[in-house]
Image 1 (cartoon, helix red, strand yellow):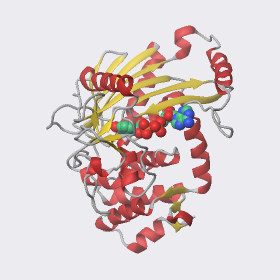
Image 2 (image 1 turned 30 degrees about the horizontal axis):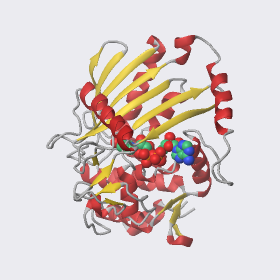
Image 3 (image 1 turned 60 degrees about the horizontal axis):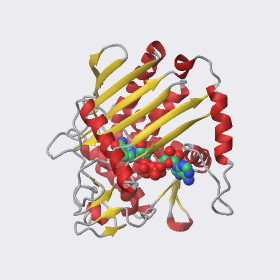
Length: 371
Ligand code: NAD
């Protein structure tokens, strides 16, 4: 399939072609081929699972960060290792390089010790955190993570109007032998910042009241977060006068606060806090081998039967369905692998403008995006 304008004026492009295009952009931006492919591959995972906010829409921003917030060619190093507790220094490598290393280490240590805690400091943006939960679950390991974004003040606490937190995602993955894993993965802001970016670029509008203006008025206008931005300008969420709201009123705000502390303070990396500090994703992740906890206790069978019971709740709407965490992403992955990835014209323009700025030609773009 080629990049193709369709009804509703969306661009639809195959995952393979889009991945090739994004890898070419990162190569042109200074990444060696393998690294460019890895960054593209994991960004695509955001789009495939329906989290376009954490997909290729991030490309222009990642490219503009090179040499300041993220450095091609960097590797992780181990800052502290006591066997089942490891601190990884991401050294401002791409989060798509750091994430797989953290999972590889966490899974290996959980298989050895039963449980392991991996702290990650100073990583580039790690994208969709559910990707890392899925990777651990594929290897039979439970994953629970708390992630913050140091120096990224975006979210107002419950009862406040000024930014005090990052979007600090909470994520958990549970492997279920013989069936799909359970993957719960969300920002602790009312919506992830990237969803506001998607809306700003002409994609899906934001739900009501997820933003707050300085005067306390609730809003869904992404310019509250970004200010006025032209279609070819890199959108900076630090430029708006307002804030994202925390999810779930006082309870969600409390969870967000906790995630900031676990990911920011316990890792030694730093909370969202007052500026200036180097921007980074930081993660505290717990890896657990369920077999080591309770032997072969049949927990997977218990989960399967509970999922069936859970889903049997009568739907709220006639055509509705009760889903478990991870269902939506799985369905979208199958659909988008088969039919291609839809993108708004604004997001597509942002990508092609980035490619052209880096020296790719219109012909290069056409060749790369044609199956
Ligand atoms: P979201 O609001 O779409 O919620 C996703 C979660 O809810 C998933 O577990 C999904 O399976 C579940 N879900 C969705 N619809 C459901 C339904 N109808 N019934 C039951 N469960 C349902 O997610 P979000 O808050 O917009 O976050 C998007 C992504 O942003 C996540 O992947 C997150 O990791 C990522 N993120 C990353 C960072 C970072 O710093 N790297 C920061 C914030 C968010």
